[in-house]
Image (cartoon, rainbow, N blue to C red):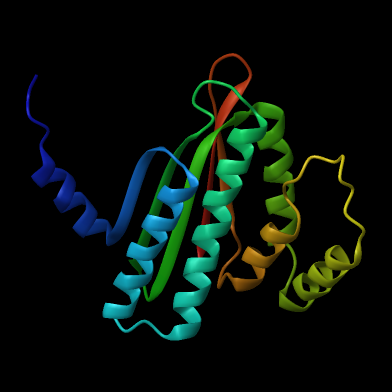
Amino acid sequence: MLAPDLYSLREHFDQERILLCFNGPISRSLIEEIGNALRNYMKTEQTSPGSAMDVFAVYIELTQNIRHYARDHQFSGADTATVMVSFRDGHYHVAAGNMVRREDGDFLLKQVEELASLDKTELKSRYKQQLRQPRDQEAATGAGLGLIDMARKATAPIQASLKPLNDGFAFLSISVQI
């Protein structure tokens, strides 16, 4: 086996201003450890406390959603996440992706598109409305309060994409600019 060209990978990370990147099975303890590393990095970079808190909150929301989805949908690769945090053009970008059932990905894309059309006042109203709704314990979770909260923290509309895969699956990617 040839040794990987890690120098080229490092150059790519530097060029794209990627601060953190992870690809693999995600667990609660791993989410916590990566979160601590992210928090420490932002502290050493003297990121404003508000921005650091928003970046951390979005990271936690995205990764926990992947973990919960994997727990609820036991198919091969469901627990594998790709997570990336970068800093470009004066903004942090938190992105995460995972394999989903195509219909779940389509549903989430529609939710993201709908939220992208709302301004900050409308997002605040939607958040309060969602908060007041009784939670149906039998209903599948997802695309609710956490997504709205991320949209409220974002400095630009949330972006999402869905790459179709085989057998009714797709790879869902979500990116939030802070």
